[in-house]
Picture (tube, rainbow, N blue to C red):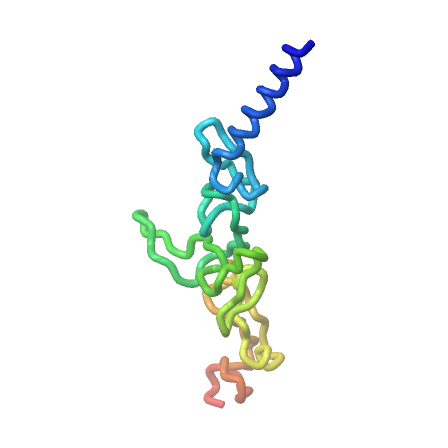
Length: 150
């Protein structure tokens, strides 16, 4: 009976040592693999990248307002906080720059809420920040029929 207890104690100790080999014990947000590499749970990583010690949260992503084109020439790929805000790694929330709003900073803030003459749009809906109706030229102070000179 003592040999079985010794074997169980040895097995439990070796499992604990295997978990301790991963960086920071995967911060409780992932599992430790056989190569002492953390496999992070969804939404966790380190410095915005998968892996590491799983100590940082990811922030929501949206189509980027600014980015570099890919080799294929594609632009506006998905990016954390749409590249228009900072990711708070402690909370997983975006802190949007002035002029941008939404969960992932994916929407431009519309001046004076488009003065009640249009709607604010997300990047994926339109390449511009606001859609105006037929009586508004886009300024926040003038109301006129487009193309009539006033």
